Structures are given as structure tokens and as C-alpha cells.
Amino acid sequence: MSTTTATTTNALQHTENQVDPDAKTGPRRRVKRKTWQTVIWFVVLLALTAVVLYPLVWLLMSTFKPNAEFGQNQSLIPNAPTLDNYAKVMEGIAGVPMWRFFANSLLIAAGSVIGTVLSSALAAYAFARIQFKGLGVFFAAMIGTLLLPFHVVIIPQYIIFNRLDMVDTFWPLLLPKFLATEAFFVFLLVQFIRQMPRDMDEAARIDGAGHVRIFWSIILPLIKPALITCAIFAFIWAWNDFLGPLLYLTSPENYPLPIALRLYNDQTSTSDYGATVTASFIALVPVLLFFLVFQRFLVDGVATQGLKG
Image 1: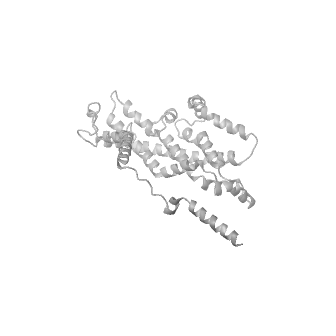
Image 2: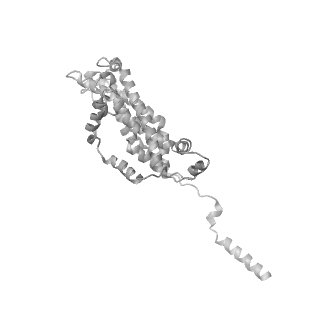
Image 3: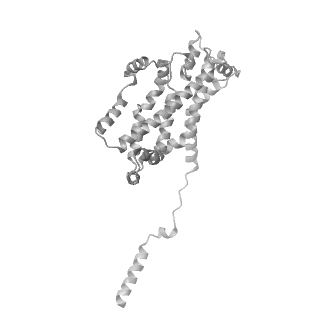
């Protein structure tokens, strides 16, 4: 018995001697980056930031330039700063005030966001959670529409809306958004929902919940980052859309901002560059604010794409 105890004691002592001596000293100290490396990285990032922000700064400073300086003053700072461009833009053009163009763009963008998010979420839930005949065929057909150029369907769509007497109204721009025609957003939400475990769905179904209750109470709260991502892109695309309003809207009082910008260059033989630049900057501000407010949700939506529930 004493021989066995002595052998065990010697083995434990031998094991302790084999332990890495660095382990007794605690966690290793982090290696500090050298000062010159930090300076280089700071300079590089500062240069990249300047390159990215320069067009926006140029646009802002150009709103204070009179028309005479366009094409002559190549510097960033105007020689004779003026606020006449803002006053001219606020007065409007073609007998329509600027706020009317702004309101039209806001209506189209807000309607597009609501319709796109709602219809895409419903379609994505159906593809991801409901088993029905032809599921694979319908899903493949929807993905195939991503390969179909928009110009192919312009004429058929215009003929349909013209026969429905919807030309020169906002319906051709808003109605398709409520019919889940944006396959990109549907595909994004389908992939997001498929990553979620079905345990919660099955538990809710045992408690008597149907598809509507499961979708509203369980799926929607969990896919909030993806919905915000879809809302951001839908807002930006609808706000900057030029071709759609150009096709379907004919009255100046129905024009959104992208179409109104064209009027400043078509009203006379000479373009009003000051008013055009100022109107462009005003049209850009809502997009920047919308993105800055919801950018953290956009990052969350991208970051959670690779997580499994």
C-alpha cells in the first residue's frame, strides 16, 4: 500500500514539473502596435474617408455658388457665396412648389417600403414554412425573375396600367410593391427565416396557433433586422427611381424629385446649374438621414446572416 502511494506521489510531482512555466505567470500581455504603424493606418483611413466624402462636400459647397462660377471656378470654395440657389429652388418650377415634389417622393418611397416589406415577408414565410405542391417550381420561377431585365416588361406593364386608367397616378409605382414583385427581398427573407429553428413554430402550433399567429407573433419579431435591411434598400431605390415616374407620370404636380431635377435643365436652352445642384443636395439629405438612423439595423441584419438558431 505504501509503495503504491509513493509511486502516485512521484507521478504527480513529475506531472507538475512538466507544466508549462509560462502558464504560472498568468495571461500573456498583448503586444502593442508600434507608433509608426498606427500613424500609417490613421493616414490611410483619413485619405480613404476624404476620397469618399469629397463628392458630398463638393455638392454642398456648390450649392452656394452663383451660376457664373460654374465652369470657371474649379476650387471647392465659392468666390462669392450666395443663398439665391436655395431661394430659387424653394419657389419651385413649372408652377409647382418644391415641397410638392418632396411630398410626392416621400409618398412613393413610404408606400414602397410598406408594400415591399409586408408582401415580401408574407411570401418569404410561405416559401420557408409552408409545404405545398409546386413549392420548388414557384421558388425557382421567382428566383428566375432576378435574371429578367426590367426593360423586357416595361411595355406589357404600361399597356396593363393604361387599360386600367392608372397612368398619371401613383398606382403603377405602388401597386406592384404590394404584390411581392421584388424577388431580391423575398429571397433575402426566405434565407433568413430558414435559419430559424422550427421548435417555436411547433410549440405554437400545439397551443393552437395558426399560420397568421405564428407569422405575426413569432417570425416577424425574429426577422426584424432583415426587415429593416429591406426597408432601407426599398426606400433608397424608390426615392432615387427615375425611369418609373418618367413612364407613368405626366403631370408636373405629380412629379417626384428625380423628375423635377430634369426640369431645371430642360426649361430653357441654358441649364440652371446652381438650382440643379441645390435641388440634388436637398434630394440627397433624406436618404442620408434615413440611412444614418437605420444603419445599425442594417449591420445587424448582415451580421446575423451566418448564425444558426
